[in-house]
Length: 378
Image 1 (spheres, one colour):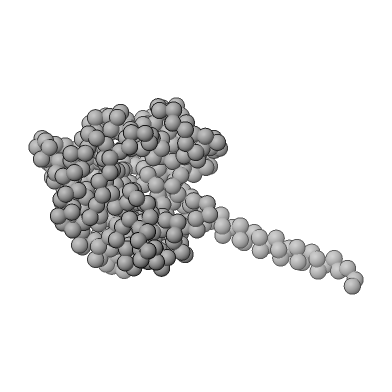
Image 2: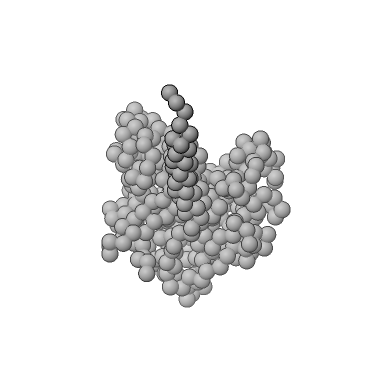
């Protein structure tokens, strides 16, 4: 066959054009993760930036919004943090729900909806997670939120070492845990960006004299510490009161002590290094687990997965699971627990009472989902 240079050039140009189109699409998808989610704070919230408490993260990708609302009557101060792990969306969306609906009557409410904002800018490699999840509002409009990664984006902190040594305890962990915000507490002012972020959060907790601090999470259904409250010893009395209240309300929940030999986590380090009572909470999310099938937006929103249904039949799960575990139910567990903590705080110290209204009840969220309670965008 005779060589035809013209044909080869055309083929090469076609392949170059095809690669360019694919690369352009992938680049647009990648860069879209850098766009901040739009939120609509309720009246009374004032916006700040975390760098106001620690200038070491000012003008860095770690700086994240902080919202504060103060009631008309004095009381305690509660801190609610979501987004430590952005691939656990019920955590950040619970914080967003409080931010968009809460009315504080007594005390102060501080909300950080996107704690590790750097981890919202990418997905976890090889997990096939969706980039965004969306909710339909009563007016038919959509609100979308990023589904990020467990770890800080490597473009902001690279490379991770082979072994990460927790600075305060000397505990050795896998090198990738240096990019995990919940292994970085209480943080260091001169460390990597994730460690400086943890330090800034501790400075906020101390400077604002936070009485009760929450770190919201999700976990896989086969993980023993799921649908659970994890409490430092100084928080245990209050957590036990809340656990009993939730059980009475037919919301089963586990109560776990903060292990003293696992370092870098909020429930341990905030309790040891500040005066606050720290609480970490976990809900059961099938999109987090290792038994799941197809991982897409539907799985994140509904939790419906045939493989988890089989695992439930075999008794392998630590949560009640019939056919699904919708995100509305997972957010409802967090919101109901938070409201119960607010109510119970006054029993320990009436001067620390925090009164908040405007948050939908457990049954409303579990039945209707999150969409009806989000504010429409202009």
